[in-house]
Image (cartoon, rainbow, N blue to C red; front, top):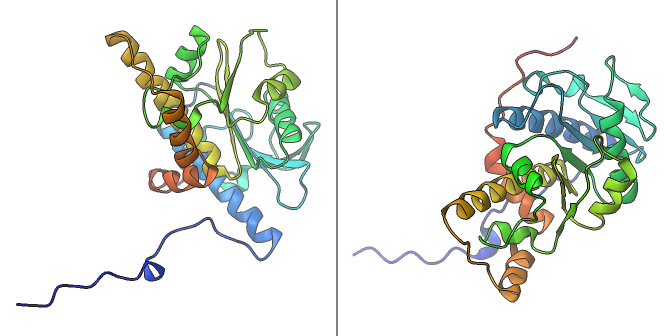
Length: 257
């Protein structure tokens, strides 16, 4: 009989971690690639509605400037070269298309209020919008929803358009914001984390609405929800969760010259 295999030492086991960069140029290229990839992924998941929906990422060298998708360009068609570099006032510094100034103002306000936030996601998903129409927070009814427990907020007011500073204030220190009658906004210390939080919040909203339709959901108690959030609610956990999902992003169908 063959000898029983011995355990592999833990230090020899691989574990993917967020990349580190030697230069700002390398980090900039990576953020732009991930931003364009995330747009294509969110489009494939159905989180796009007309010209609505924007993702932004802080430039690693010029921290008051941000990369964002151009107004009116389909998510599926966005390549890194199509992204715009925009300053905090909404002026395009690099790129050949217009930015949606009204939508970007909210991104800029959030970036200013949250210097550690690399990326902001504000786009359209059906379940997040449905929960927003109810004016409700995400309830701790699943392990996944607990990632948002006491770490998201509700802007319980509808003004017809997003008030940039009010949006930033309502988000505060949290990872996600439900804009009543509008939808979801998420942030993260990487593009990957911010996008994962948006997808996770959208899925949590879906489960919550399904559970409510079937009966009365049973809430996870405070201590259990808090412990679960501490384990699964970090941006590093979000980054790791996003890696299998991002492989679903197809190459862009077109690119501007």
